[in-house]
Image (cartoon, one colour):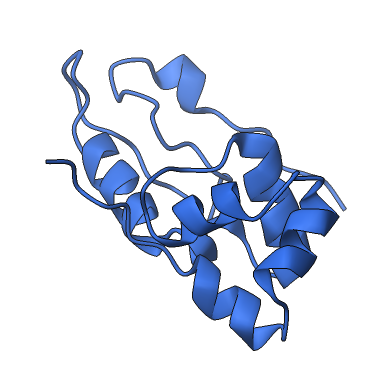
Length: 113
């Protein structure tokens, strides 16, 4: 038995007042079957379709798949090669995934005004 992939696709589609057939047509799908599988958590859309859904619903991809995002981030909390993952979003930009043992890779140039 497989585990369903939780998502907020249906919630965002309904919030936008769209039917599955409307979304399928905008995505260029032949029918609503793939969209139904995505909304039910039976499969994931490819990256292009996820980006299109994000644009269509006016939200970030991570809002469509919040549990998947949390799972991915949790998986990044430790570095399989050793070292600690650096998370510094405020001062130097995004540096997630850079091991502390490579300080030269952690430097992110500051934009000068």
